[in-house]
Image 1 (tube, one colour):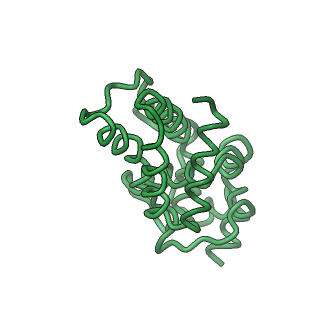
Image 2 (tube, rainbow, N blue to C red):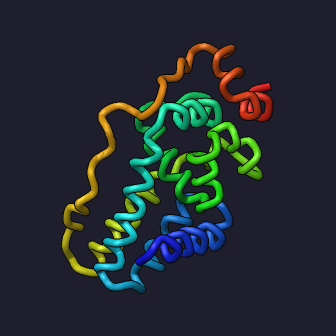
Length: 173
């Protein structure tokens, strides 16, 4: 599975779920069940590598604003959700600037958006259903112990407003 196929699966499941992250995870599992086990593992490798790439302080700050606070677990689930938003949103947030999420996200409801925990388990679930076995180690280096980049002071509202002016204006004012 190449990168384009990975993003096509993500996009198709998001569109089919009309933005509901839990429904998207269910649809993704269904689509993955139509593949062979090695392709499911390829999908898992693509997902995991993006999940690790998103372990960054600047993204955690954006999640903090969008979710009105983000614990370690909430940030993990946010990174899964961010992948679930598709290539344009994911790459825009990583390569552009996390503050660009203010423009990249049409709607954001902190009650349902921002938590893609189930998306993170979709490939494992599909692999187990296909093979009856737990997915093997993917051979992907783990995320670093600390997020990459410069730490963000989540408790300093003035610093957050300065660092993320568009997110602050859209979601906090």
